[in-house]
View 1: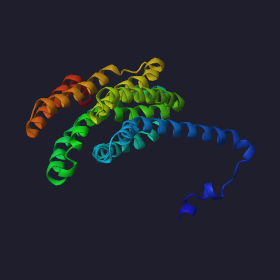
View 2 (view 1 turned 90 degrees about the vertical axis):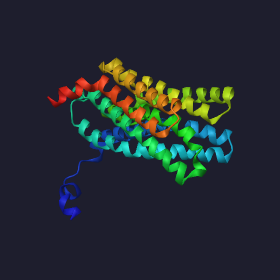
View 3 (view 1 turned 180 degrees about the vertical axis):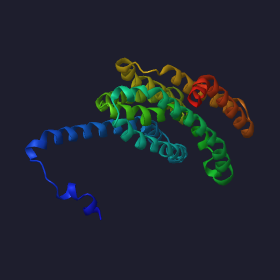
View 4 (view 1 turned 30 degrees about the vertical axis):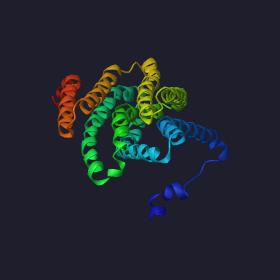
Length: 277
């Protein structure tokens, strides 16, 4: 069945190797750069975990890694968006693709803001079903809100760089961020010597990474990014205030849902209304 459907490719006319060799080499180069850019972004996301594994005992690392595994589950659920968007964007002219950038970033950030609500049932599950990992909540509540920035970078911004064939630029920004992450983690441990401080350093790194990764798109294509960036920071602040100021988990959930809903309406309410009309 496969051979019949794709018979023109399998048994059709072939071009001489010398004719396709330049394209073949270009594809290999592009693939290598894309892979390096992807691995650089992964290193940025994993560097704080490596610091904890080296500087603290195995029990602390196990709880820290558990918090990151939960975060990875959410990232895996959201990452499917990029596999759908990339083929679609690749077929469009670059000008049209960049015109979709603000709405795409907005949709991603609003999606992550909504997904942060999952923190509260997860806390209940850990407290009552996995009490040995209850200390992981301390790390999880620090790093989870940063998903609003890291998901936008690794899923949306990276997708636009791939569409524009500017993977080398994204790789450079990731390498710069990696150096900054290393320095901030060293400083955090040197001053506070706690895994919580390293978690905070990773959140700071996410903020810097967002600004660095988007600056090429701003300079080259003049994309609108500040409103979405401020919205992401506001949602993160709303989450932190809800979790650290209020004691009751139920009231924390209510405060965050209400706060995030108000922020979403303030920042994007008019845009949603225009789309409906």
